[in-house]
Image 1 (tube, rainbow, N blue to C red):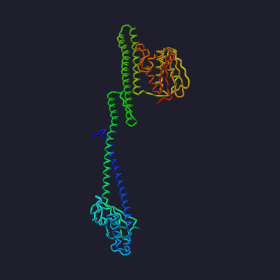
Image 2 (image 1 turned 30 degrees about the vertical axis):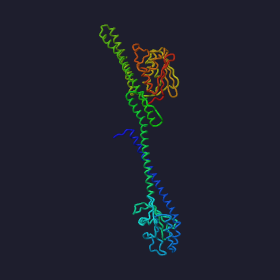
Image 3 (image 1 turned 60 degrees about the horizontal axis):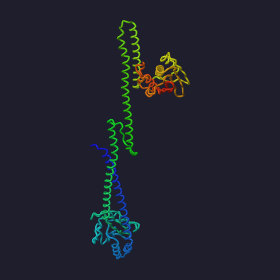
Image 4 (image 1 turned 90 degrees about the vertical axis):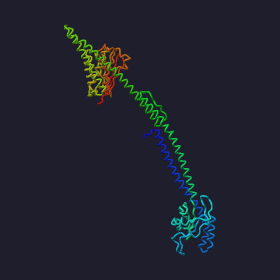
Length: 489
């Protein structure tokens, strides 16, 4: 059987409260009982000592040979206390044979009455305590250094079953023993134990109430988070949980809100990627359809009888085939970047020589001015770096005007390649999306042979070097490539 959070919290709080209360109540009871017993014994000894102090001179006279002194001793003891006995353990003693107690306790005199501690009534026929004394004689019937040194112990009267405190004082060969009935004392202790039990039960009830209240306080924010999680799972990515306080539940709410923010952002990015993918597929289909349509239309003229028509058809087929091949290659390059499998082989590259070669490839008939400042040697993938420069030069020659300048600047940690033309610049509405795929500067697919992937590929190649590619207008379009001197391996 599985219990919910509320039940587990209540059970835990009740268990802790009950255990702590029980331990505290038991410890308090034991401490109070021990303290009460010690105080009762001390009071009994004090009372017995005062009583014996008044009566023992008669006992001393009895020891010196005055038999009537024993009656006076008994009368004095009866007036001062109840339930006492005068005993000896030397039934056949001589003048020098009472150094070591031996034999059973022999009662010489005893009280003429006792008190029933359960009712407080006097009893003129005191119980015979000899049997109770016999069980503790080796504890309380010992020789001491004087009557002021009292001995005490607790025993049970076999005749009545009552617990008794036994206090004794030794005088030569005799002991005066007084019995204190602990019945009323034990009744008081029992009543005290029950009071502690009821207090413990009350604390437990309060603990249960506190547990129910605490469980509700804990469960409410957890339920809010659970409800928000369900809403988030149903697509409500704007759902948030109110954060209250600074405890763990507040941290839970904060963590959920952070998760919801990240999930919402991730979903928006996925949706944007999906829209981009759909646009990408549409653009690819359109750019593939254009050369293919031209090729299909041209194929029908290849069997014309006119040589000039066949020649023109062949030229058109070659042009569209090369265009299609470039588009396919660009698409494959983009797909490798997306898959994270682009080949990267860095090595030391002399930028001025690479730029001269790129000019011969991209704009052999266009005047391009190249300037170099500082150390322009960089560790990079020469093939990808060549692609960046070629794409930027092609873009400058196609959309800008001459003069075109390439400025190489070597810094302490990075090298910059700046390609600028003297054209009208980049339209402001294109700047935010200039490096997106299939974006063309002329807004018309039919007006250029470009695929709209050149700048996107150039930027990806800059990023794979750990660098960047940025664009702005300054009397024409300006593209700046920043490359670290040491590219990531």
